[in-house]
Length: 127
Image (cartoon, rainbow, N blue to C red):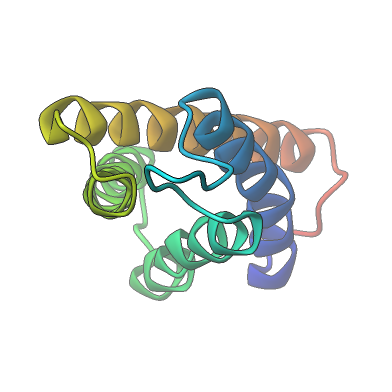
């Protein structure tokens, strides 16, 4: 699969999903107590995906390597999301906010990985 196609699928799946889950968590929109503006939420959701070119550059050569890399990426993205959200929302329970960030990152990464794999398998993404 070529990088541009994989990155496009990742962004099309993960950015809206992360923003929607941030909204569901009550982190968006900003209110008097803190939170993310809509542009801030979109920017953070996109910035989390800067891990994608790193993963592609490393290029794990086996299924096990890809799975290990995906787990590491989800952990990094989830920790960043949770820590930034804890600060921006002025969370009284930052541990819970970080856990929520990890759940959001897991959901987004799983969704984009599964869809990308399916599209590639069905010949809908270039090899």
